[in-house]
Image 1 (cartoon, rainbow, N blue to C red):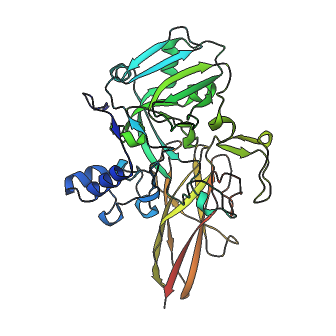
Image 2 (tube, rainbow, N blue to C red):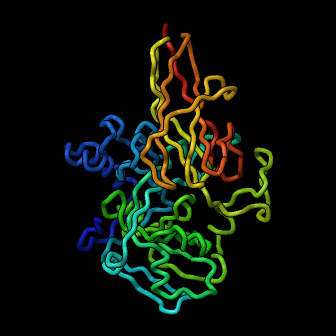
Length: 391
């Protein structure tokens, strides 16, 4: 297995100007470099949609999300504030709290531990926020704050076994190196110990390359099947504790209604729970803009769930009255997305709309309309494609 690159790098700060410069350089790079980072994605689709300037937040256009593994340079970027990148020089992962042997692991120490890989979807909890009605505040993501990657690193279980996890530990607190502006609460999180022991890894690779700084390098937490809020970037400390983390990003932000109410109704904190698993969802990535009556065209997309598998994607021509199965691509891993395709032969000319929905391995079916919630989390309503059919 490949490991992170050798040597060290100076600290970096990625502001809006640098981000756009790097994006422009990638777009104008020689063919060999483009092939390395964007294999399978046509040149005309290699671009990003900037949703915020400070901090930089950028999503991937749907027509670039057509490969099983999302290229690193096309993977969405989510920041709460402008990060300070530490690089590998002096970086270490501290493991403390309810453990017998507190650890301080360098990047080299991490690479010498038993390695693992997991291919899974990373989706921002707010992906689709810009689609809710009535509108909700926050980054107005549409469809592209999501990607599928192969993450390489070390199991959290192996790290905690080495540290000697105590029975009193019920939650794992995670901390990153980025610091918020003055008077802004730090982004600190925690996860139930059962989840991290079962599935989580500390990743230092992404799609076979050293984890890029915009995506959390030198190391980040990867929590398969759960929303990106749990995937701590620029990870530098794990602390096993009896109680869950406190603070704004645990007790106020990233909360979802226990019982859904009417659109526009804000619920008290006692009626909210933390965002965890991803909801079942499908998206259309390559709808033909035009078709001809009697001639077949192909509709394509992807689907995923935190269940962890998608077992079916269906397409409707009549807004859900009838459904026909799409073909699922055989390439798949648990918690990864399934690419799908649907061969459609339009019978009559005029405007047509096709709807897509997915069903996961637990039997959950993607709803027609995503349940409204005050923060606009986990949007998963049917995705529609409009096609003009000529005679």
